[in-house]
Image (cartoon, rainbow, N blue to C red; front, side, top):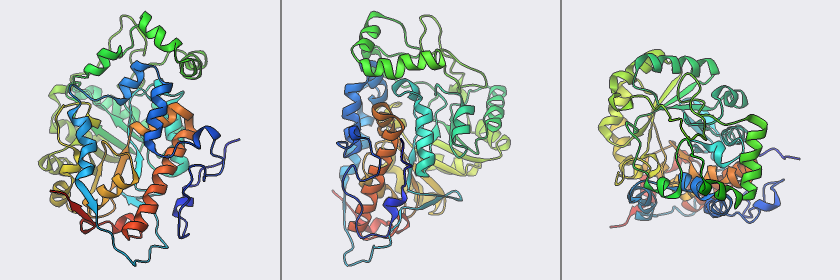
Length: 414
């Protein structure tokens, strides 16, 4: 029997938040030893076949960007305010006119239903329970219509093709599915050089091989609980949402994916999307302040600073490094969001402090690992861990809400 997740537990006016991993009523026993988001990665490494774990965890080429996304957090130290009443602190955060229960959400992650049974659905259902946003990836394996029915407040992330007719047909489908927020990813004119995928035997679609079969057999819990269960209950997964029509199957010896001609996308295409799309429009994959201004001027309601989790251009700057400058040029009231490398509540608070107010952080890989290890309960447990860390550290820093985070709380090491 599932107990409904209540993130308000972390917003309660008590003087201290629960500190035990099993504080949430109904937490499954297998999750009680998971004390941090990093613990989910350790568990997922054991649970998932090597090619699938490599796809989720890896970056590209030398992994310089992947490492840099984490190393930047070590450049800062806190300067806390003491003797400050924080007994009424709350995680509630307003973003683009919507109030969420915490200042973080679930980033889009492709092929989530390959690492966890019904991965995209369990993420979006957990987000609805926790009252945080979840972004469905355009490279997901579950039809967007089904995900939107499960969580009408979910966002949709599109890898738009370069042809205008195909863009408009995709937008028609997204609108008909019921999504109100469209996230356009702009940092993938071509795919990054992900050598780790090739070395681990991962491709899209997956190619049948003895190595792939052995990887599945040696991970029976994943094989039975995710792969075979999906095939029996739902048939062969396909890339459902890259275009207006169904795409390639996830397993094939001959089929290739159609990515569309994305290398000639321009700001004119974004303006076309803005003219057609009636809901909120967010642009994801921006790093330069000048591009942030262009996105705003093209009509975007918000942006997500991102280097694609270190998976595209090796050596690209961490979004956290460029965040202060982007906020300075756009102003504190504009919806500047960020992802790439976030693992701790302290990481989230650091970004909010640099952004001078209540912006938003999206977390990707840890929620994928959590779903793989323990399904929807795992995703909820991950959200609870992150919320608990944020609330506790807000008291230690001396602020009542995410709105109270300021750059004066930070010291950057030389």
